[in-house]
Length: 408
Image (tube, rainbow, N blue to C red; front, side):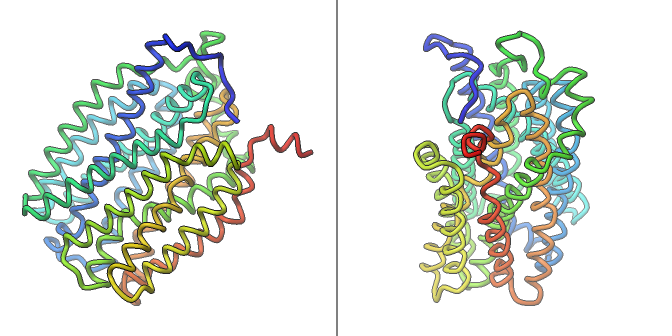
């Protein structure tokens, strides 16, 4: 159920402009992330990294994200969602350029760049979700999964572009530097259309998005059982999604002995499936509710994972990637919506849920990498199934408080 701050007028130009700006913020973040992901195999080969070594390098993104997410509530409270995304767009541009040029010099510049890239992504993520939740409330209807579909559209664009760059043998430095500049510059401009972080009824800063009260009460959100359980649920789906982003291309290339282009195509199939699931997801959520839909998707993702890992050939792996991505599509955005059920506390809870969820990106790469050294990257992906099972049983925490009150 969406809690509204008042009916949205069809002539509300600022609201429509803000909606478009939020879409682009999600799309831009997706393009940047997928562009980097398509060049992981090439950078791995250039640096001559094994699975466990690559996993440790990838931790730099997660470490930056976790630190950023812990601070993002205070950052967004002080700067506002508009300025936060703009500042992180600049940091992302600089960081991705460091990765693009630094990998010729060795691992340290890559780690430094990826840490900054992760930090930018973390604060950008929370700030655009806070703005998205505000737009959703003003519109009076579910739209958050479609914002996240925008992220997925961005990842598909980035993956297709990356696949073309790999096929055409365009250098990593040129590819990633161009993406960084374009995404950073355009995002910096379009976020000017974000709505002010204020409550439209009172015209005062929302407790969760700004003001002294919001900052002093921030730690209380870490003691709320429902908020923490939503965070664990999001962690499970973030691990499912993140492992696909980081490892699908490598797993197909190494596990099925295919060229690099085939691996990036499998990655693109995964991202396309997530995009479709997020775009059509709101209709399913409105009709059947969060809990049954997410439990069904957990089963679908698990089935796809089994096909991907144990399938007899590459086409079967592609089918598995399709189901895996479809099933993983709604976990993160629905978790963000569940954290935002009370608009007055949305940013604080979103920050906590995102912080817990992003632990998957901190622990996931080294876990898959270490397992990959012993049983291959493809078989290491079995670990995802454990977390999907946990998510299946935790899905009940997504039920809106109003529905729980009715049941009581």
